[in-house]
Image: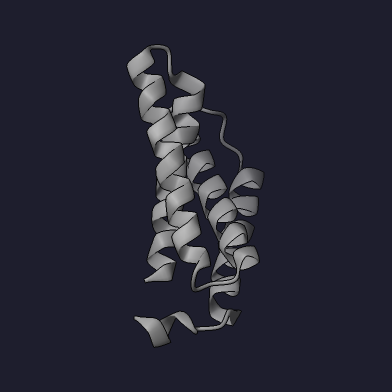
Length: 109
């Protein structure tokens, strides 16, 4: 369950980062703040079962990769194969961290 919290935190991170860039009204800023709170909640819950360094590395890496991809696909940011290569490295790193971290979270599920 802890890894699901990390996944949720990374997904929610995409929304609040986009909100930081594009929010203009009070309602949009309120939604952005709510997403930040949810993101931190999910990180805190994940840290109860997984080491904080692992949670933070996976959260920031996967969130950053998702944000760059969404920026290219949705907001027409410039695309390059160099960017794609480095996003791939982030994903490989996140998978590597997941594969080599303790599975103590399975005991509590």
